[in-house]
Image (cartoon, helix red, strand yellow):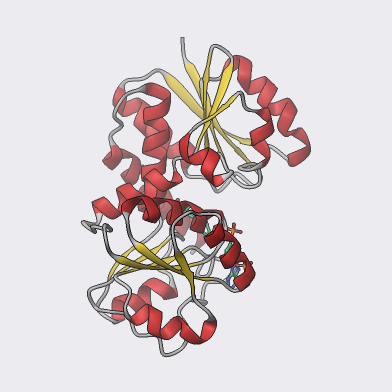
Length: 278
Ligand code: NAP
């Protein structure tokens, strides 16, 4: 029987997950469909009830990653520590919540050949993406500097981890950046609604040995362009998106996905969208 999977969120039309997972199921010879479901917050409980009976699992995106907690029977690993779920496995009507973003970030660093153990990382942002990145970096044994527009939120994120995370005030950002081996943008700056903005302050100098990692995907952002001009290696958020999807796939199927096919399917769709927008 065909298994059913979905991604739920609002908005959802932009999601790459249906394309990526459909390609992965096909490549693995698994008889499954993957759908995009637009679910407004008021309908979350009712929709999850619907998924519980006919689906094998689903992904969760904005705005349901935290609210979904009350609908789940079990919460595992990073999802509990992060207070956010992005993947749900359904077995015999039991809903288990997981968060594959930290694993996706860690796998992306490996793909880029970056060994984070003992490295010095600088993270911009203190939202859900930053929390997943910091979670991964703590486990990898990196030392972490964290800066955010509203510094209170950075302090609050830092306090929620047992490890020491240094919150960097605006006046100290340039110095901290200069010594970083990994710089991660976990803000939306550079996305289509703010395409010309970068988290790097004027005059920022990065080490040419550093890896600049932007969680924003699907576009060459000012952050990555500036880092590139300074001789840094760069990585955009598509790799993390694909790798977190690969981890969801493993949880659902117990099989190893063809990550390259997932990546290529996303790149193809992004190219198509860019062509139709121009
Ligand atoms: P979020 O929870 O809403 O947090 C947004 C963060 O960006 C906050 O720290 C916020 O600062 C900061 N920010 C927002 N607008 C800003 C501005 N104009 N100037 C400076 N800082 C600003 O969002 P999120 O879920 O962490 O997502 C952040 C980005 O990461 C998005 O682009 C998202 O698509 C991407 N992301 C990608 C992946 C992936 O797999 N590639 C995974 C997760 C997230 P304040 O706290 O001061 O408001």
